[in-house]
Image (cartoon, rainbow, N blue to C red):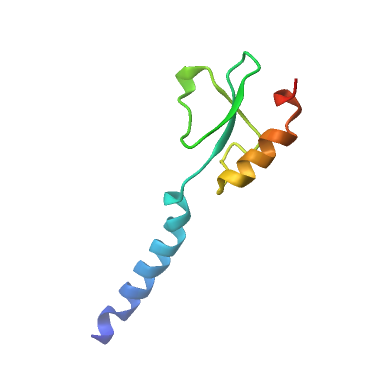
Length: 76
């Protein structure tokens, strides 16, 4: 059993570092017509939707909604 311990540790470390990649992301977007929204999925580059704020996405919907309210492109 001891011979597998290093492999188990490495596997756990890899799984722990990959977990944030599986977390839900929320994006603040602008459709180009002054309509802004929070999306729960990354928009397709072909859609013409522009990502505002953090291009890596926000980990919580609340953080994305705060960014939407604070973004000057989404006002007015």
